[in-house]
Image (cartoon, rainbow, N blue to C red; front, side, top):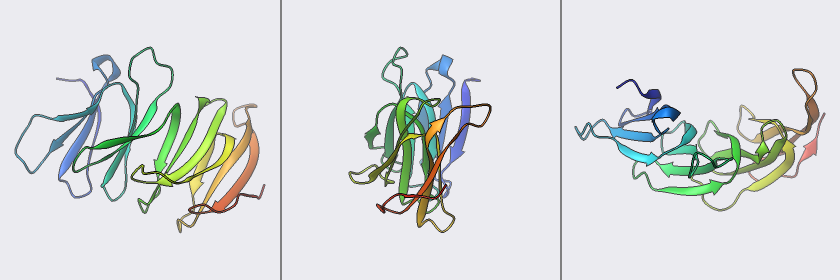
Length: 178
């Protein structure tokens, strides 16, 4: 009925996830392809964004409990059972590592100000590390052994600037490199 904002299959094509546009409730839904049922199962309403791990086992999504709430809470759900767990508050950026082992997130008052940079297990379980504050962006290394981020972000002109740090995963010490 024209209210879907985007959709993505799991890598094994067993399920299709889709998000309705915000004016239609912003619901994140799943349809299992193999069960022949066309009625979707709902994960959450008021979803701002979602990402699926590359192995398709986890889906992370940011949602609010009410439209007036300022920040988004981050949840991770198992794509098979849809059982979710809350991972963080006031999250404005998140990404799975390419090997689907880690989930990185930025928590703070606004993307413009930057936030605290956390990396933890992809399933949202306890553990992980807060690597830095006032972080605006981050990246996993291609070999997935390191993570780098820009800290002490100062918005200036179109790009802004800050310090570049890196650390070995999962919980290595931060090293300033630029």
